[in-house]
Image (cartoon, rainbow, N blue to C red):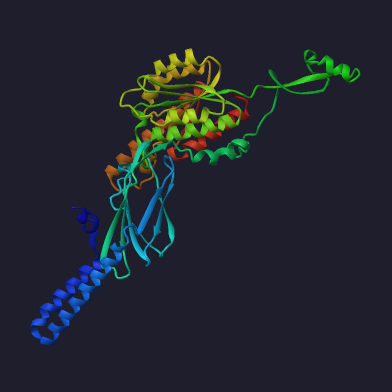
Length: 448
């Protein structure tokens, strides 16, 4: 049994072997017509048999001729291209041709994953491929299967490298560095706004300067005035920059709609992660609330160093629900838990005007004490239908209905804006950049 596992269980034959074998059969068939052909066929069969034996001995003489290791990060970034490496070392005395079948996690549904390459004798080679997950959660990588052939390419030996490993797929943290520059620069040329700096009276001290006509005499610093020999000096204050920014994510059925393999919830989570990072870089405090028919995660707005990791862990395993989201519970939570005026970014989706109007009273109530930014999604499928040429009555009907629903989205924007609520209607792929730009715009306008 041990002999079978070691020397026969991993034995396969190549396509070249079967082609040559088939050719020999044909040769023996025609050998019935000629004695010379029969002799040639016997010699060819003997040579073929000897070559196969030699090939087998060369492959199996070295017990561990091939070593391999998969290198994958502890966590992958959802919706991004992640690099996976396989390091192969060849201890054979010949250049080995290898076929690599990596047993990928079932979430990728890749049944035909195959890498072909060659590795020189006594060398190590790194082979890299990419994966793009579209779901958050735990992904299990299984074993590496490596099929090796010699230059004769008759016998194939399979190496099974135990490589089972569980990797977590987190929200798109690759995007964080991408948007860091946007956070540090206040270039809002796309929105046509410029940063406004105004002098305030909050507790955040900026500098001491000379008194000029019009300054509030209550800000005079008498100790600094005495040191200046009578020249009046005043304390200069800036409006407090550290504001609260809460991202509220709707996990109801409206966020289950797929777009390019990812749900709207995944796009909202990726945008939340980036917006939280940008807010922290802008010296604001970032918080998080998730809800559906019940309240989910609630993270108070903080600015400490570990807040980003806390938000990342909180967003890691969020799932959509099939029920209707309860905005009344959301309003009760905001009223009791978020007592300081904050920027509330609500990621949700409305497919009809009546759907918005059902929740509008609660959104308006939140907007009385907070600055509310409602972010919902444009249905790109409807846009494509409205641009499709009309060929018959049916296509005209479909285009008309699609135009009606697309127009309702614009009516929702107007409805919210009439009540002083900021809105973003965006395609899912532009969600992150549009949300960050809007936040920077509001920050520059001192709206928060």
